[in-house]
Image (cartoon, rainbow, N blue to C red; front, top):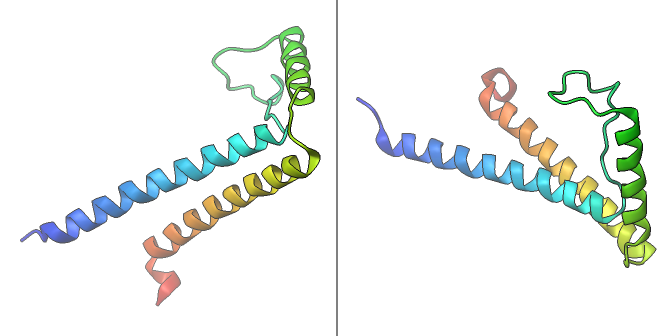
Length: 110
């Protein structure tokens, strides 16, 4: 017989953890862009892309990112705080993933 309450607990926990991981990762990216670290990927390093950016277009994007970072009204202290908070979000995301692996693999917690 199926234990439906356990099924609901597992599905609720997986939905919550998925939302937590996505939120931490996206908040970390947002804090990095606030700090002025805009993640750009060069076309040569990302060969599996659906659309390939030309070097001219990539240079334009880098120039636009630098211009936006220069126009940022935040003080250097606030930018540094946002950078550390962004890294902290990524660390928490990694810790949550490792804890999930710990819970799934029975050999780790015997």
